[in-house]
Length: 323
Ligand SMILES: [Mg+2]
Picture 1: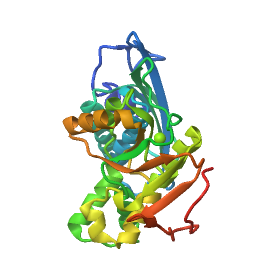
Picture 2: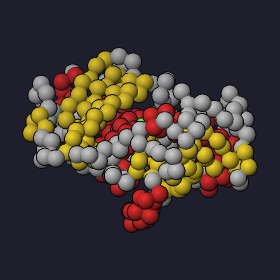
Picture 3: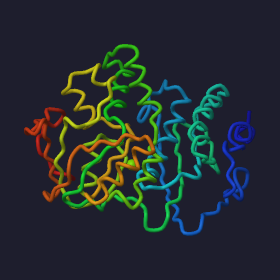
């Protein structure tokens, strides 16, 4: 099968069809329409076999996650996803592999009414790059830079699951079957917090998605906002599956430093606190307050049950400076 036929067969229909796609796949470039009074948000992410996913990964999971991480970045900006494009490098043309890959690719795009509008397929080591684009109304994009001392720090969902799931896949952690299945699913099929992101427009003072662990991503907000934070590690939302699989200390470490959860970490001024909590309960999204922004620039103070918490993980630190 030639590349041309391959693209025709697996990618040409582009999944969900949108009215704002004037010209989609099949021409030299896609032509799309941006709504009036909205800005275009653009993000891109590359996943390389052996670096970002295990070489023997299920192609459905690889494609799903590549879409999910891009939609998560749009969500962190408060943007509603619209279009993706895909650049795929594959060592050989395996139709079963491609069928499974496209199944994973279109799962979230169907759910969020996102259309694949273009891309490129080349022969080479397995890797894929997805570019996602979406809309955000003027003056409502979420940034990393708006946190102020006194703002409350929240995180959606539960954190630490994906890191534990990866360790189970690598054979470095054992868990009971049901818990293991849950944690692996959280690693392979993360749910981008698209609804939460749009609900936080004009309400959150800063926002980021959790790709590097709560601590690392909080550091990005603090660095951009020139603030510090007090973080209550006992308030971190941990799943039952994670808590039943590792020690309390290890569960906290997964939440703080393991990545790939793709939850939203955000800050809210006191005046917007009840508005945000009402919005989240009406959307049925969990968000947990885990701390507060302080004026101690780039310093994070960790507490466990209101006592200083000594973090003994890699690098062993208690207080640290944000980069
Ligand atoms: Mg991000």
